[in-house]
Image (cartoon, rainbow, N blue to C red; front, top):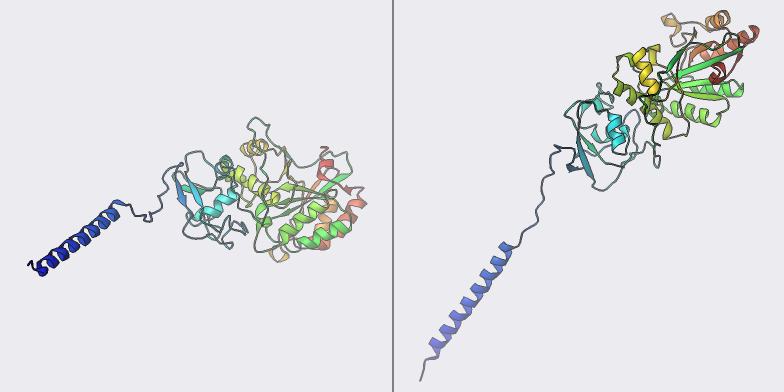
Length: 372
């Protein structure tokens, strides 16, 4: 009679071996199967590479003078990395990727101080060779929800230089009242309402920054007034950040002009061409060539300066002095310089109109004064 104990032991050993073999097989399969693991985002080193969205989520408070108020997307997005080369401008890079230079500022303000509107060194006209900019091609960060800037006209190198003008025909009875806006905003809206109420034509030269500003609605309000009363008002380009164009490179001039155009285009179909007013009245042959190439055939200066930007406490004119200056100096074809934020300007306007009428002159559109 055979012992059952031995048979049982052999059966137990066989079962143990089978279990061990199965365990080893499972382990081998696991080792052969690749396990997905997160990879670090590639460092942007070439214009053809991509990287995930910046780690710091862009916020509406850090925008170019009141720039984008809405994020392009709440979900993760892929950014193209573009390395700046010699001759690049922010506008040219944006145009090549079907976006806007303001969008580039939005996406890169945490990377470079000159693209950070909250940094004292903010200067969107300055980029450096070797910088790596994050871009979403064919994506525009709106300044207002749903607002998409229309493309600006392509600068034309073969276009003639802009013509600097200080006045129109002296045989005319028409004079142009022009108002700059880019700094002080009080009492800009009140001046516009007075002009509207009294049916007085004027040309408004605005900076793009005052339109985009998060500190005041005055710029946007003035722009909407110009838009609603197109038969009464004209619009001109006064740059984006009010920099002296004589100190800028050609690419920086393009950024300044296009920046103002983009600020207008997010809110209106108005076109500031063909009138450009240089900040500080500064221009030279190089500036005229660059401005003319951008479509601004007339660089508008003045022959009567009210100096209303200076307060009386700093030697600026009183209301009576502003009126007297216009009375004594305005002639047919004159271009008179005021500021929508001027001191005593609002109070002086009734007297200015009386002075013009006494001299047989009348306010007219700038295009009429220049015979355009």
